[in-house]
Image (tube, rainbow, N blue to C red):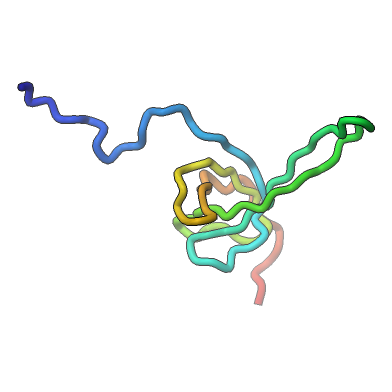
Length: 101
């Protein structure tokens, strides 16, 4: 028996990174959760015109730093709740809105 201890205890796995997407925060009313709108462009199969499709994602925001209108970079992760399996990597751009109130 060797006295080698596993070095990967408590660390992030070295598996390939999950999907990353960029989106806009549309709701930040929940604690540690934001709703992000992710838009993608695809070409219509018959008419060849580019159309926009959108998806709303519930995203984990550990530090509650995101505000409505912010542009954020998201990374796919393990399921954190029934609907939440994405997390905020960084806030790419802040919204130009002032404080509401």
